[in-house]
Image (cartoon, rainbow, N blue to C red):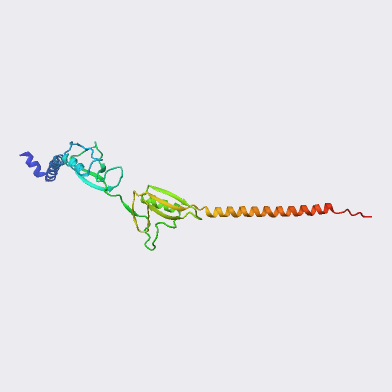
Length: 232
């Protein structure tokens, strides 16, 4: 009787207490729901699926209750096509049940790139480029098997590119795993020519100096052999 009378006289306090009580009940319901749906306190160990076939990896993960997602396809020669190259989270990680596991699959075919995308001209790829520019371009695209062959010439410009024994043309796609041979001038022709000219000039100067010396020596001999002139 007194309690009802107190709440009737103080409705603001009564409503405030009711709000607090409802909030507490709501938090309890939310906490219980989170434990049910998120499996709070439950963990699963991620199995090892790297270096296994994509199909086998999917079956292993699904049997453990995990979901899967293919993030990207890469290419590595040392791994069989269609096999898992990398997984995330890594094997042995403790994660929530039903967690999504990201897989990176080795592509069946290596990626191909256009080394010289110059549509305005035809001919060999990178022809006329300096060796430094050509090597930088190949490295940027991901080519790792690159050999350089020098041919006598008067500059350091590229003559042609050879991929797996075939000359590469502009706008031609080349697999990134191809063996690239760069034929380039060695820039020594001018130096050799200059060296030959210098030697010829030095020889010419030497011969001229020898002739001048011989002539001067002969004149001195004539002066020495001439009859003396006595002055009275």
